[in-house]
Length: 278
Image (tube, rainbow, N blue to C red):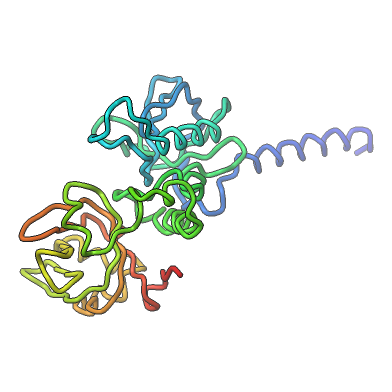
């Protein structure tokens, strides 16, 4: 082929390859089906994306700061505004690429998606690394490891919400005063027992004054499928003595209790769990 014809063809091929690379998914994004491009028309509270096609989507796997119900409408809550500003800056005015399961929607009909910007940044991970969000209780197993790692980076650096007392990691003995809220709690398992197939972990010596963690039988059965907890799946009583971090809603029976709905809510923090933070 004559050089004068080959050069334009080569240029076109390079442009095509470059465009394809620009749309490539980030390396840390889990292998999820692509749902295609979307244009964000506006943002609503909690990181809800209103799309130009009339659909609505929500950032799966993370939780943006929300104004406490006990706070008056006039009182400022900078964490929420900072998160909204960061999200708007990431999205800009260009299309984004959505990833996730086609039928995945919350009870309000909003698609639950992972979102990648036009320049190839994974929005959920970016917000977590900047301390503008924390990993949600409902995080999906496929994205849990990457999102928890991004959150830990911000927590170690005390960025964003991790500088605020309202979002700090709690200790088990603090939980009696935190009933009715979602919290991250760390502690060492004082006792681990199976009661009618359910795993009961107690993070302290007094049932009324420290947190009890209830892992129902169906959730316990999934430990074997979740690598961070697979080592304790066959003998859950081995959880005794282990340090863990757990996220979820704190309720109350005899004392504060957190019922686990999925294995991803539990992080082992000792050497065996390989999630130690210094």
